[in-house]
Length: 427
Ligand code: HAM
Image (cartoon, rainbow, N blue to C red; front, side, top):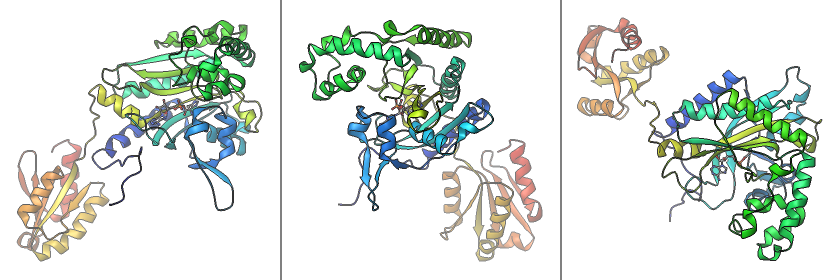
């Protein structure tokens, strides 16, 4: 049998890749307007980085990481997410010392999780994400949320909703944790083995369990919002006020806990409520992670960010029936009739490309009729026909494909003839 693509991965082929490029260009432009700069970190990191940041009791670390020992005996993991690596780089490159703070970064690249593949869930997926490090102003939380929503809205999504929660500061989470331990401990034997070990180590993770989510104790479990101390409450109120100030609608959901351990204060997700979107409705997730920089060995620095996958974004566009304005047309196809014309076409194609046009020619010795067919398939706006007889007179024939109009044009003015027409929007 021939070798096939690994489960949970996909090829993004021409015809489809243009959508990705379009989305990535829109994301980059939004980051430019919000003044987030791109960072590129390695695809693999030391496994310890994820144990320390994402958390040892999370599903990601316990079940989903692609980890291996390299030939030097080091424990290496393909990154399951981007935040840990950005924070590592922030610390390692001492970005906390930069004169302008907060440090605002974005990334776009593949992440790897050994999950059960299904619609919207891949083993390799591309996350676009941002991280703002160095400010605990709640206005930054709202900036980060606005940026994510702006991407979805710019691309045309309407059926999306923002859900927020506060996980509070250390003191609040401690109080909530005690309440959770008390709540679950009498019946913990009815829960899965993972949850039984979570009770001691990190009872909040029980709330995130996929196996036990229908257990009766889940419904009336203590809400973090009842355990927020004054600082956390005021912080959460400010985030909500700023969201209202910039006309962003939201829902507060006290059961939103997120699947990674580094969060505190603001946690948020953006969901699709388009019909037929499928079971996994979360498009984007993020939150505040004050304390993570310190955990990774840097100075005490607050941070907040989000990540979203392009795969789920494309699925949401599909569910809402949105076609992106991507075009796969080429400007010009150079067709040739005769040997001399074929030779001459090489330099003509080169001149047209140097002028910035997208140009194709025949490399397979096709007859002129078949060349026109190819030009049609490629949706060429113009076909330049080179014939031996015309070349002797230093002219070529230019056909505008949309109108069928044909003109004889001097070779010397071919480039300006086509570029002028294109800039006037004529096709
Ligand atoms: P996360 O919730 O694990 O958070 O993932 C963020 C987003 O990545 C999800 O909302 C979803 O769009 C996408 N995603 C996750 N797993 C898959 C998958 N298997 N297939 C397709 N898409 C997937 C994080 O990763 C955090 N680092 C986000 C963050 C940044 N928090 C603060 N800064």
